[in-house]
Amino acid sequence: MNCRPARWTVLASSVLAVWLIADSRPSAAPQARQGLTGAPELAQAYAAIMDGRFEAVPPLLDRTCGPAPREACQLLESVNLWWQIQIDPFNRTRDGAFESQIDDAIAAIEAWTHREPLRAEAWFYLGGAYGARSQWRVLRGSRLAAARDGKRIKDSLERALALDPGLTDAHFGIGLYRYYADVAPAAVRMLQWLFLLPGGDRIGGLDAINKARKGGLLLRSEADYQLHLLYLWYEKQPDAALELLEDLIERHPRNPHFQQAAAELHDVYRSDPDASLKAWQSLLNAARAERVAEPQMAEAAAQLGMALQLDRLSRSEEALEPLRAVINARPDAPFGAVARAHLQIGDALEHLGRRREAMASYQTAINTAGADDPLRIASRARAAMRAQR
Image (cartoon, rainbow, N blue to C red; front, side, top):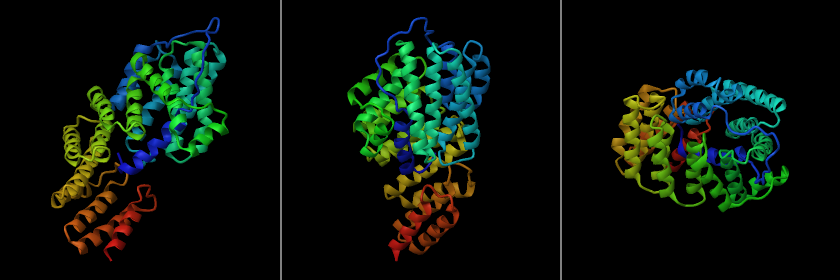
């Protein structure tokens, strides 16, 4: 959970870097081993990750390994940690563990492809492992390293589909590549040239993503999530994006990220502060009832979101209470919550005409933000102070 503008920017850049995958025309290889071993068990573990039931994943994987390949379980352990990072993306405390886990998973799956080069699922999971690492690298600003991983994703998933044209889940990644390669900014398309990747196809990409959504064994929810971003950023269809998010909330009610995304969508893309406030209130209720993962973090994020909408609705006095609650609770997450609360209090007080108090709150926000300030809280507070002089 985090400040909205930075969140959308990070995710926008990460999606392309993760799925740099090319269109392929696979031809079945003789004696190739096809299908996903232990798919039902793996699907249960993946669903738990998307649910935000992170603590349930290790015992699920203990039961899954056996029917499913050990390397696939190793990858899902990393994906489980990656989703915990995504929920609070500016918190770096899990980075070391994730980097170690995903590097080990890549090494194990690469060894698997060497042992069984005709096994399609080995190549599929290798592409997925590079994809998870690429997302994290983009989040942390290592975009060139992420692009190098993108080339490996492309090669791995091409190989998987060549060995098994029926591996429907792989079309999700292919669809994302086709789409983004067509609509991405020129600076991103330069990476295609650098790594000799083919061009894109917006319509074909959407078709491939929907093929994976309808027929894939593992990635339906992931495909829905990524598709909702396409509808927001490029297709200009916020209502269609909201419908996908509502389906995700229904399927995965414990994952607070989907509820937060819906609240932000109402604000940013539908300009509906009343609906956004209602969505934040729903998340707050779920957090206090411990119906979502990371309830303390979700509660703080909901209070920050509610206060922002109350201030926009000219209910600035009401906005102060949830912000002071965040400050009093001093939650460890989401990252920068206390500094952000001081910044928002400054804004609300300024709107109430209480400028001396507002200046004090802005100064406290600067002092609280510290040196590691990816949300630019200190610079925003300084700008607000200059505007009052």
